[in-house]
Image (cartoon, rainbow, N blue to C red; front, side, top):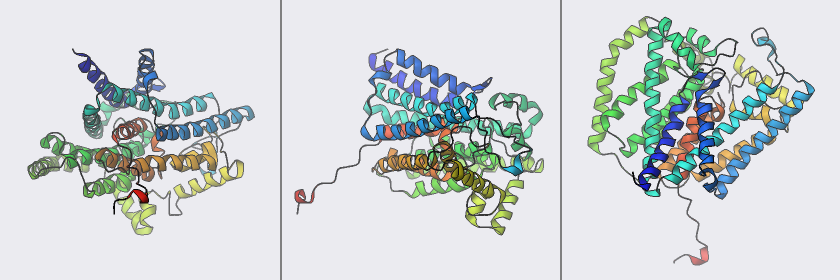
Length: 451
């Protein structure tokens, strides 16, 4: 194999590894994803690849803000451990979720939440350096395809759990955390909300929202064979329906539709490609109707939909789409309000650290708990820098912009960037799109303008 071939193989292997590790099982208390990504980064560091990474000013600003939030949260956690503080727990839920002391488990878990995305960014950067510049678009296309394939397989896995829960639950348990407490996945399964390898419906909803955006990216640009696009669309829809996450309705479907109408200046889709894709989608739906009727008749899979419609009739659209977290007076909204008030009483500016809340139902409350209002300002500034970078007139930039908007919207229900599995996938896509996005053109001074 030639030197160029070895570099290509290294780059594409690193990309595929990041994706497939994110869907791996648990190895005791840790995920296969964590072990694999950290070991891969260590191996690349020993190979000398890590020292060759070059960081531009905007990249350093994003990483600096992320590490600043991490430093604040770490300092707060160590202070809380010294003072033997306990997590803030909603009084109504104390029988189900007893207050626990903040300890090393919270510290190490929080450090992993922030360092794992950094490791993914480093691996993507090394992969892009190994691949020649004229091949980096193929690298993005390969990463997108790998994520879509894994999500489609996860949809089939979730459907298998729905049809044969007794047989598949022992297998599924390898993909769900076993911390000794009540399993979120089992509680969701009792409500007929099945995420496959994902532990929570919110995680699955974020993943399938990302998948819908990635599918539209391939469709807009005519990437891959049309029959493959046609087969993947119903499978992504199946996974989104089975997890019954409102994040898909709030972020996934609207953003995929908006992305479809965005102007494209790059590779276009031909009429034949479009026609073939929709014919395959129609055929898949026609074949799936009998199976769908059987599944729906054997379970309460429309329960969540009926509850959603009830909440829509009794409240506002924003309240219904966010599960009452925003725009309403439901129990979820009161939980976030309670958390916000408690943080404001104890440490509004700098927060309380890792493990300070018993649950995190919002990315913004999560950052507020970790690093206070200062941390929230840093987090919003980081998102603004990334969004500004993706204002460039290129297709990777448009993809990145759709993903970062998804992060903002889905953040009303889950801290997407630090979610299990999903965080790595989102950071992976953002990092690849960032590397392929050209810098914004500099504005010419008025004096130099051609009249």
